[in-house]
Amino acid sequence: MKILSSARIIMISIGALFLLLWGAESVHAADTVSTAAPPVEYINGTVLDVKPLAEFAGRLHVQAGAQGDIATVKLTSGAEEGTEVLSLIRQSTIPGVASIHPSPGDRVIMIKSQIAGHTQYDVADYQRINYVYALIGLFILALLAVGRMTGLKCILVIAFALLIILKWMIPAVIENRIAIIPATFAVSISIAVITLITVSGWNPKTWGAVLGAFGGVAIAGLLGKISIVLMHLSGLYTDETMMLHATYLPNLNFQDILFAGLILGALGAVMDVAISIASAQYEIHQTKPGLSFSHLFASGLHVGKDILGTDSYTLILAYLGGFLPLILLFASQSGLTLTQIGNMGLIASEVVRALAGSIGLICTIPVTAAITSFFLTAFRKPAVISNS
Image (cartoon, rainbow, N blue to C red; front, side, top):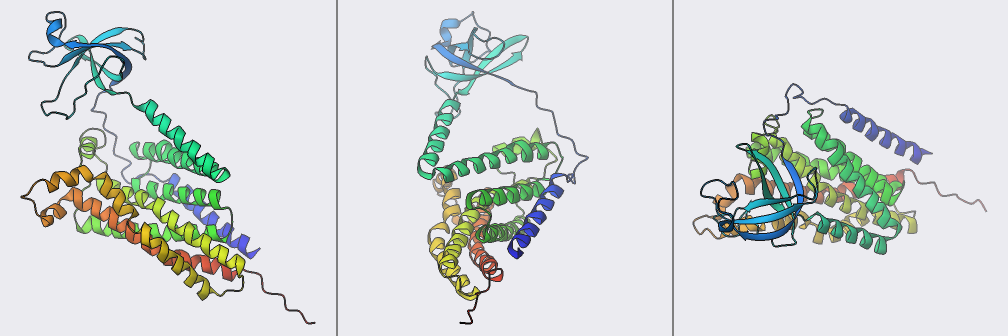
């Protein structure tokens, strides 16, 4: 009863916090979302033919000096589905940059616009979503084939995480219903609790893993926030963030977005470490239920040290791999020193995210070991002593 009562107190507290954050209003509620950028109509199409622009001289309205090829595209979506249109395939002046070279049979995405009273169709990009769906299907099949019921639980919690981020967090932030930092904490708490309870059940190892994960993420967040302030990191270092700030969300604090990315990026690795340690301690306790807090804590630390050997650079390698082209760009410029590269805001922000997340991951080990040991020893049933 004591265990159940303590667990209920923990879960009720977490639920109350989540509900509080869910209904919280943003501190910038008076700000409005910019709608300066006009809507764009995207239409799917299939390329039927590609010919040089010269063959359409006098037959097609194009800007003076335009260069490229003309593609005949059959529209496969929208109100004009089935219609064949002509589109200028503009090529970048830099070889291989922002250029596409469609061939007959390729499925593409078209942009429809009105220019000088004429309807214009431009080939924006290739259609890739079907291949994405194929990879998602392969991922689900692999989870089910290897994990069976556990794999099904993983699919459910992944779907929950995507839904709460894409369907609640993002719209709430855009519509100024909640600030991004409390939204991030609400989402992180929800994902950690639902994921660990779904996968591991309702037991002391789950409680220890949940609270241990919270501790690790909190440490990562604290270090990240301090670093962002002291290093004067603005978060406006990529084309996407600058365009977002200039057009749709000029009033959004991009330092907070940088912080939110740090929290969400560290959450998965921290939960993995926390549940691994808590599960090991739980199994040890099941085998030898008489072990003291200190013995269980020491066992958790030993398991954590083994995990640390590989997981310590999980986040480092993840961020390094994502920024490999940028690293190659800087490395190819002989005039730049390592100090100059490290001082760049974009690089410094990624270093902060990687190192703060990794430190949080490391701190998750003793925090989880201590909390799980407490749950396993504080509420266990006392041994029955026979008088015979």
